[in-house]
Length: 318
Image (cartoon, rainbow, N blue to C red; front, side, top):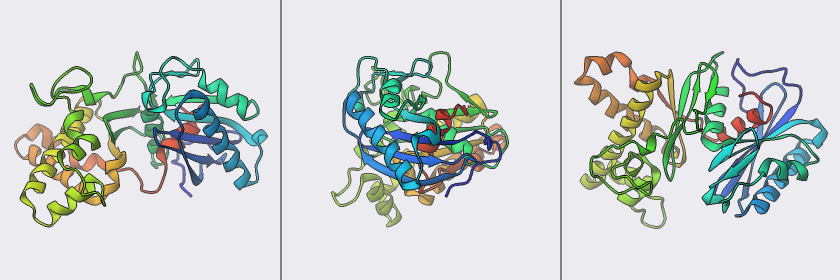
């Protein structure tokens, strides 16, 4: 079981369920009143608002049944999901990977399917940032959760508080220009950081051989001395390091927690990103004084941080 950080509200008053809803899978976790996260659950995601709500409800009921609990034991359910999330109204729109375009009152749909338990929605990266902060031993955690997935973006917890931004777009650093007149981006710009530092970018630069994902194949080939693989890996590491610098220099967060699919590479990924940060710091006394490499860490393996954070949103610990 994952233990809560000291800042977690141990007197939250009941259990909560958190769900990390992605385009292909839904991860769920039951969080105890003391903030301890229990075993996780994984279900395939089906597209469309009604299907997403049905999958969420099924996950809640299964987690409760496995723990011998009832919906009356819950203080809330939280869903972290992509798209534009209105946390006040409990609506989501433009969640393309979920087959949701127009605004949908998803919180009400899920609540109705779980016996009226209050349901909160949160952007998936914000939920992941909350989950990562919850697992730190600090009373007022200060971090950016940098997700290296199909795209690139960050969630921010500053001085123990989630920072969504004026329009909910805080942390969308993937669309900062990294290379002038570089690769085209679906956002309409060219050279966006997302085109160089995301899992999608890495797979495009080094497609897997079929039996292994591209990132895994790349790092294995680089470790074996393949010069082409080393060059691609190091360009990727430099781009991720640029993302870290943006986050540290704009928010001065104490920690940059790297998550998303690429983070499953583990220590080899962390090593090359830290090395890229150290190389830049050798040429700049200012960057050296920021100790950026020391601030970077990986999301804890095997812990669904997004689902944990969604559970906190469900119990209003945001």
